Image: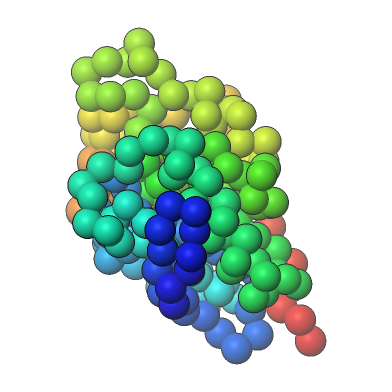
Length: 201
């Protein structure tokens, strides 16, 4: 599904049950795509519990750029594409999230997009080797509950528990969750399953 935004088209791949409980909009990191193992694991774990999962390729990736560019433009494109998805499913509670840079976008735009919660996978707390350049403020400014899932060997750091509603730290995992991405999906499904309303009758 192609979605127009002020900064070019985005593309959403949507999976879920016929009668979903909620809409989960997920996106990729700065250099990756929606086939990242953790995003696929979240899709596979969340759709059985009633999540309608939209994995979104942002406009900068659709046009072939390697870097997101301006955070302002990225956030404008994101809020536009989420609004388009919400218009198609107006009765579903919205959760938004992503991995790495995508998690930052989800936190920065949560209130404007009308999200009820954020899923932040491998949130890049700081550039590698530069802990003084913390981005914890983006987590705190989300304005909604944030689930953060990180690996304890992530060179981008691990958020503090005080800056999230729930922090899950996976032993032995790095930034890409290569060892067992299924654990990421399980953590997200457990958290969302407990907080989302039941499926419509």
